[in-house]
Amino acid sequence: MIKPDTPEQRRGRAGVPTYLQVLRDRDRDLRLGMAYLLAHFPQDWATVSPVLAEQLAAETDPAVAAEICIAVGVAGLPSDGVIVDAVSQWRGNPERFLHRAALIGLARLLPAPDTALLAELSDCLIEPSFQDWESHAGAMANATASALGGVTGKSVPQLAGLLLERMRIPGPDRCDFLALRLLLGLTFPDGPLPDGTAFTDLSDSQQIRSRRSFASSFMPACSSRAR
View 1 (cartoon, helix red, strand yellow):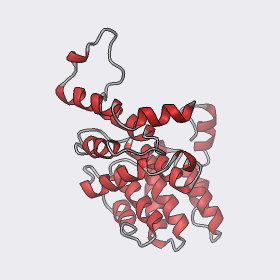
View 2 (view 1 turned 90 degrees about the horizontal axis):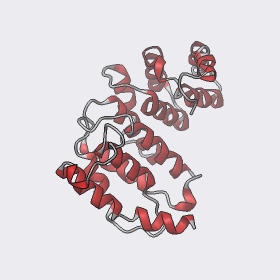
View 3 (view 1 turned 180 degrees about the horizontal axis):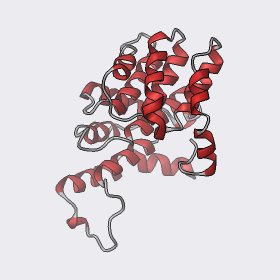
View 4 (view 1 turned 90 degrees about the vertical axis):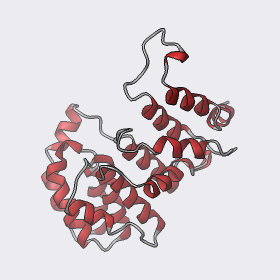
């Protein structure tokens, strides 16, 4: 991901109109590359969104459709209308990766994602083993983390519980890092606590989530693999 508000990012943004034109190209590989590239420019969502919706409605290649849905999940904003309809048409697709890509897109678009969507994306976060982070499953997990990292706890009040439920299940070859990072962000939305904050200063929900997080399979599994 290109870091925001850097010279590189600003130069890249200047090419967004061209990227959108190439997204309509007959060459499948060019469309795939442009879909990936457009995820790096959330500042241009108002310009990019209509074209992504149009291309999704016409797209016939599953890999390109999935990449567009993931771009929506990474760069999108809460929306309605054609972009939601365009992404929703791929939800339930028999191709699992395409179905999940649609869920990633909808997680960022919908003002209140449904529990079934969040439950499946929670599964997606913790599925890759340590050996799988360079695989397709690892890429989907990272895309899921990016999409869910852009939502607020108020819009997904059930997400923390779904993550905790999965992290309590032992997984000797699994690292819960992405799930834990997301859970801590939901638990402490204002960032790190001030120096001197006592555990008893936390709210009841913060105390419960903190205890369960550090009792999860994340700590022993990741620490043993790191050695």
